[in-house]
Length: 83
Length: 256
Image (cartoon, rainbow over all chains, first blue to last red; front, side):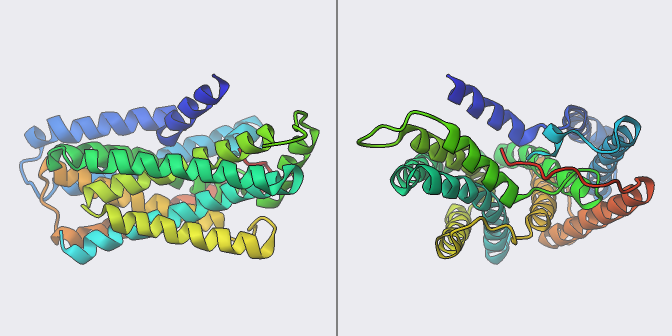
């Protein structure tokens, strides 16, 4: 049972580490899928918008982690450092 | 997609990611072999490899039965989540926000835990050694299986992806067998950084393909995405380093 829990946690952990980043990526992908076609008529612009959004979300996630690190105790916790 | 593009987009990420994961699994298997005996370590590893191979054989062909558009969207989505996770971690490590992974420390800690564990049976298989080895190879291998299936099924290149992972496995196991110690000199964070960029780029490309987006330069857009993610990561690392004072490093962090 412990092993099954461990495997389930590992599978979940494959895709989610920073919950806020994962949620915002999902929201952004849904936006690009369903909303962007109605907003940006030019089809060649949409791939660039898709990439730019993801790049900004990544940079923001790292910025949040670094800021939290600085505010709390200089470095992230040992658990967060494990991979 | 051009056939050669299909092959390298499947083989390269599978090879690099597998190298990282196999190095981590090797550390535990070595600790098991040295402390609990090689028989249980090797049988545990072989059982895990058989299970992982079975997963690839079942889910690989199964995924290719789905409509390619839906497959591209689903796999692209998952690869973005997966790749971004690796890339974020690699950026945080490269910028000094979190400690680098230390295979030697993980090896020593694993040895201490295994030596302290009771339950060695006088005859037959050492259950603790078998389970430790099996669990480690299975859990580390799950990421390899996901990458092989994802890039293999989407690029219609399951065999090149499997070959990439297998070559990495053979290289790591050979190096481990020769050296008899953890491969702590493998630039693990550099590999994670590269894999994170590749998977994020491929995920973005395939998600866009699934939605029917018009990529400038078609397949060549993948190179543009790789450069884009690389640039974003390097700028982010530079900004983090500038904003974060370097503090004395803590004790190295163990592997999971």
